[in-house]
Length: 116
Image (cartoon, rainbow, N blue to C red):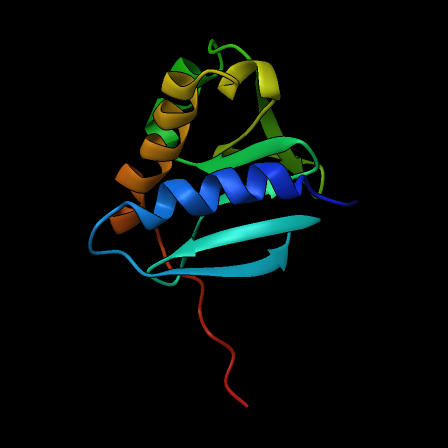
């Protein structure tokens, strides 16, 4: 699935203004992942954002406009959500979702790097 370059550019601009983080991009989850300090933080998947957030906030986030739970390998992934455009169209809503993912990032588990 192709991902929205416009949304990816919007994320790049936003993340470039955040101090003291290192951002890398990697194609994954059928889209483009933005890794912050070596941890998956937020993705562009089609026209949607996919955010990683504190799993304790799952039920609260499920009530937000545009939110859809992430299902992988037949099970729902707590702490991950797809957000459709209606949920991030406004600048304050976009900021909410990206900041939510950035706030959780320091506490998120890092994937183990494969060694050759």
